[in-house]
Image (cartoon, rainbow, N blue to C red; front, side, top):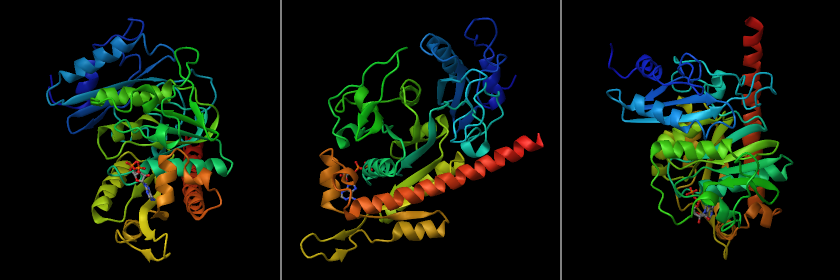
Length: 393
Ligand code: ADP
């Protein structure tokens, strides 16, 4: 018997875990998603009926524990996903493919990502047209500020918009939208209603935990926090859900990129070289999981002196644009470093809503338009591909 860490070995161990009704094992029941192994870390999902996730937590723990016994495993992240019953509405537009049970084993990183056409254990989000991640290689580059203003620009352009703050290390969306200290209401079946701000639906891990509480999240806890915010929130019918990702390119980001059918990612970078190196890591991560990069935004790109109006490129403007051209990723635009952007975001009145006719709202709106156009183009390409696959089979 092989003791190496392989997908087959993981499946072999999982055959010892009984399914929800104790009749057969989870592998034979076809409940296990493709297994992803990345440097000693193992990720997979188990499909369960909607509403049974809480009751089946011991099954999830058993799967995690048994896979953790394999030599060479450093960590295991297992999530329960609620696939819809056969015969329900078709898959979300974001490219999730059918919502039926997941196939077993065989999938590598990115199996089931939108570009590859299968669910691969992803959480189905049937109400949501497109899910767009806003990511950065490191913290402090203005990712959350950009995410908020992009979301508000989508909303201003007539798209029904939601924002999910998945930045579990520093959830700032409640503060940026002036919602701190408020709590979301409970909905039926242990679910949570999203909050509302400026007409958008909003959910943040910051509503569920104290912003100042130390958050020492272990990998699996990150996974379940993210999963819960996606699965147990009663999102309405939305054209677009903007996800403010945790900064960096570690497990939490990889998990998030694989957990939901992302339509694409927007990468935020400052012009400095260091930030660009980090941004490149972000690009590679999305490439690895086959999520299209909709483009790069250069934030704090230049500085317009408020008193003399003179422009200065304090961070060496243009680095992100050059990098985008070099690696053939769309460049979405430049956002200046401006006191208004900082003050308005930090006081819960983002510039797109507090100064909708001003120059900054225009910049965000143009960036949002390009990102949306690119997301729609990728969607059309995917759907074209899907049609072809359907016709051939
Ligand atoms: P991240 O999400 O990358 O950690 P934030 O969006 O929280 O970064 O931004 C960090 C700080 O920088 C905040 O105080 C924010 O108001 C400020 N900031 C972000 N973008 C700009 C900008 N273009 N001009 C001025 N301040 C900005």
